[in-house]
Length: 204
Image (cartoon, rainbow, N blue to C red; front, side):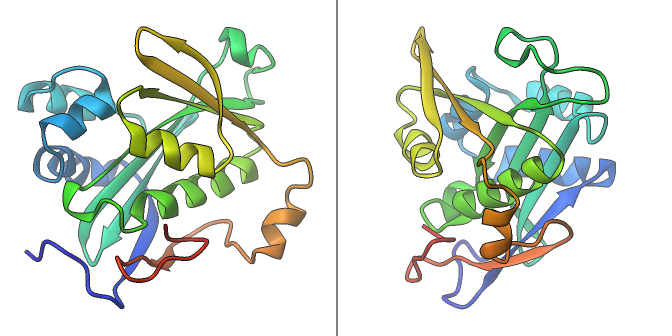
């Protein structure tokens, strides 16, 4: 298995279903080191706790999982989960969820090559298309790459609790016109060329 990406290799982003559960578990165990796992889950993870987490993952009913693939290799996972009834999302109602939280992780071998940016771009477009109005993320304060990426995408810090920074982004007021102007696809598989040498609005 190649560790890096060729300069012309595209990353494809797909919405995952329950059939991708085994690939997600393998991603967490083989593509992330202990630090990356800690940044993603905010606690020390073992193979057993990773397996337990993946087994309870939901792929529908207000939860969506997106995968970034390098060929057939899963190199990034982003999860979008509705959080009804929370203080920050009081307008959530059954059948009309408007706020969700996200979690994301990218293979250690392909960090800083645009995979995380491509995943979050895709996730945000999908979230707004599904009617969400606000998305929150939590990141440990020492996960500076995540915080910097979120800030570039428009997330604003809400608060800090015990070394954990909570950020939020709101749907653009001119959506979907703003999205349509960027010719961003709303569904299906998306190919994005993200390499160490190519840096643009989609891959950085």
